[in-house]
Length: 249
Image (cartoon, rainbow, N blue to C red):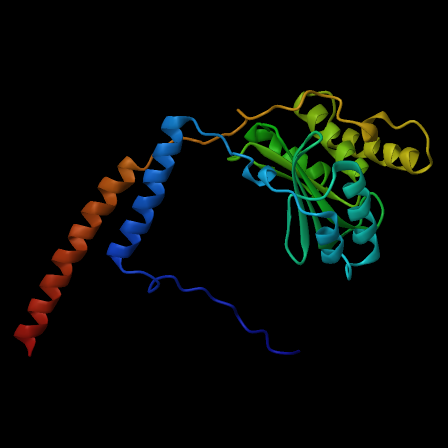
């Protein structure tokens, strides 16, 4: 058996104590400022739109499934707002807060073997105690509690619509995760056969526009007092040790 190399990360020497405090302090000031202004995530990306020729150049050597889906999305929503060599990005397109189409893919075997490469986001609050149910339903649906977003990732927009509709029905108590899986399986086959599949055709609930964030609450004051006392003890202990070492020498 080949030896496996352990990949370890040691951050203990990355920054001095002063640098750590400055870095953290900047983030705290920014967070307080955003909280006071009740700022919601802005869609600055919509201010720019690529030329179609630019987008087609990006996807020129992409795998065929991603390339064909990219052309379909461009026809439906227009050229993306921005791109990297491996992804196209649309903002506020249709019901979606963000759409990200990637040249990379993730293998996924439910409800049938396929690859995931289309990620689409909406603002939606999932109660923390129900996040596990969403994961049990579909591992390619991801809840971002802090940002108040849900991401569906699959190989088509219809599949993502279906997944989001099931999330809503799980959260509202209409379905269990097992029931949602069964409904998704039936709807997937129906949609592919050209039969009626309402859950895969459009989002069947009103999508929130912001206000879904769960920023949690600050509880660090007690930790600051405890750690400050510990730091003072470290200093005293260190000075005592140095003095003892000098006497011993």
